[in-house]
Length: 163
Image (cartoon, rainbow, N blue to C red; front, side):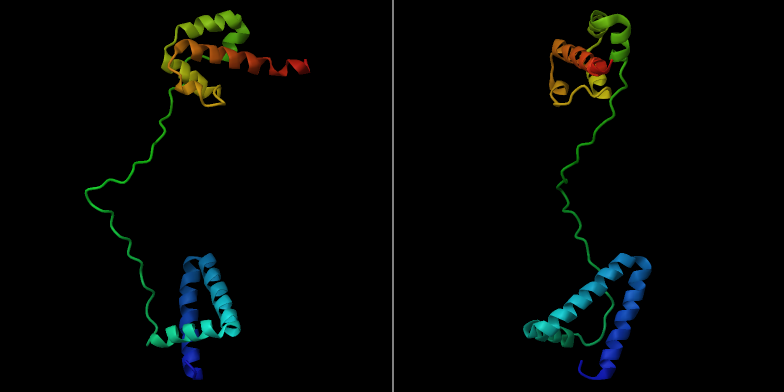
């Protein structure tokens, strides 16, 4: 590519491709321009890089359409690991803070005594009563009940210092 006509052809081809790319994705066109500038700067500084780039350029006879990248098909017979999906929990059947305000700690404990483990977990989940992420794993109903009462009491008495 030593003659001016081949340089003009290469520049024209580059500009055409760049215009097409910038119409689709302006950021990608900016990246390409930056890479071209960095490659030109490196070719000026590093003669080994310049000769390798020139050899690569001269091995191409004519400008070609951009190559498409073929994505390999996933192997058949094997399944990709499935991503765990989170299912939405059922809304809580009661508001522990409301019951604590109206009926007190004993009333809350009584109301919680009527619920099964999953309903208690729904309350813990909805009201954010598991900061250490342990209570949702517990299988003992009494421990889960105690956590709800404990968190409801601590949250409701949190602002007593300002009264």
